[in-house]
Image (cartoon, rainbow over all chains, first blue to last red; front, top):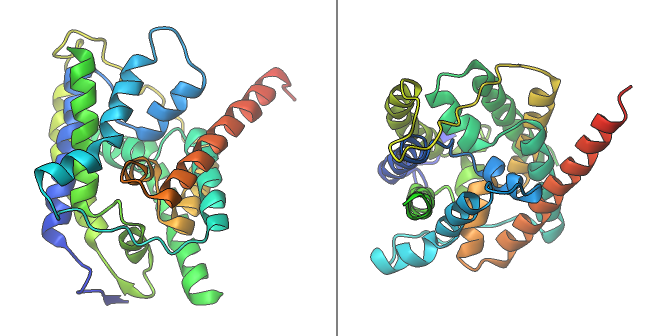
Amino acid sequence: MSIDWIHFTPWTALIGGVLLGVASAAFILINGRVLGISGILGGLLVPRRGDINWRVFFLLGLILAPVTLSWALPGVIAAPRIEASNLAIVAAGLLVGVGTRYGSGCTSGHGVCGLSRLSLRSLVATMAFMASGFIIVYVIRHRI
Amino acid sequence: MNRISEFFIGLLFGWGLLISGMTDPGKVLGFLDLAGAWDPSLAFVMGGAILVGVAGFAVAKKRTRSFLGAAMHLPTSRDIDRRLIIGSLTFGAGWGLAGFCPGPGLVTMGSGEPKAALFVAAMIGGMALFEVLDRRAVSQPN
């Protein structure tokens, strides 16, 4: 292992991370909801009366984040580097969609909120998706 | 009040993802690539988030109502079962394949990136597939 010092950005990572923590804490304290993106989005596919609007308003804020941030702090958003082909993107989306619903959470629900709640269940889930992420990237970048 | 708060918390979470660099799949894959040139940034993102989150959830666990008077929807399941593990392994495989997880996929779609929109469309397809498979499993117990 060698550290990629060129791309390593400890300060913006930490500041951005703190914002994720503040948003997650605010969501449970103010609205009584766990900030898990896959659960919030997935719940819209089986809509129940009175359980729709909060999801829509949250997701609307999320999607409008790039536009508003580029007004507030121009130049702060790094251009995304997307190497995957369209076919790989579709396969990845399907795996993420099915997997997060079976596993009841993703990086936000299990990774941030679950670990913050000191949930063993979320720790196991986080270790599982990290492990398979490490393995897939190893195979793709170093074995194919 | 609730709707305003939900909107702005979504916005804040999106800003956090953008500032942290997690909306860049190249940066996520740089973290997942232990054998290559490793970018530890994602560990700092998680560290910062959990530092604040632990305090927030410690307060939340003691409350019966939210600040706005809503019920506290804290998870109750403690099951560590096959669904949790197989599901999370599947999610991780998709995450490593493209470098997108659900939040950054949605935010980057909001940046107008066509590949992120394609990812989100496929992800919603995957979630719909889960609903169909799960309903079938419930209606046909073996």
